[in-house]
Image (cartoon, rainbow, N blue to C red; front, side):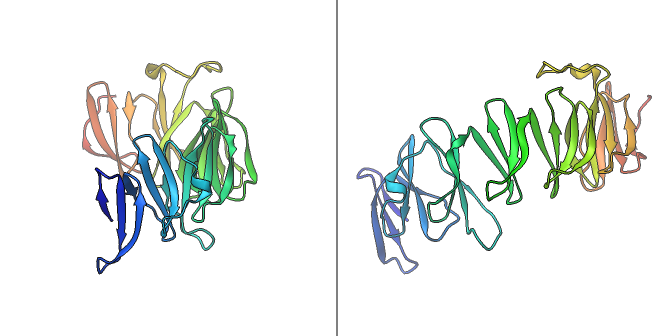
Length: 257
């Protein structure tokens, strides 16, 4: 790609520097598809064009276009696009809407089997064919593993479901920080805050649990914990910290409590 900023034109070249296409735009952005270009028309406007410079979707312009790399036989690439009404749609590499752009306020692509969708402050999930998995009545969906997510209900309680919506862990925790090395970092509060988005951090009780809901490491006295990574995690108690393994054994450091 060769650009001429003053003339607001970009030139698409082959590897031998032969001119393929001249496009009226400020820039040509990264795209995962071989058949579609994302072009920047101005600082606040983006659209799709073919490699021949022809408009896709009738030249419709968007505030941003976010490419999503996916690995499947049906779609070479997917793109998140917002509409002027502040809704978001999902397009394939040919510019066809996979998820219409008038249904959801935001889309968080996790996999073809599980896509989180938002409507105002509530969220749910669908698959790539727009089939419902979780109803739009959850306050939060937390990606955990390749086949499981944490889900927060209207009472601010969090459980775990798989990508088919099957319940793996009952809604019994206050939040989940993430997942690593087979363990979910879960937070529990003695008091339920059903109408509050914010919960006091000083009341956090931390536990590392497995996907069956069993508590593997009790860190309820800790003041802060981190997700496991490469078999270790850091836990803190006041101004002290320690490195532990997945069995809760201290490998480095010392905690007085």
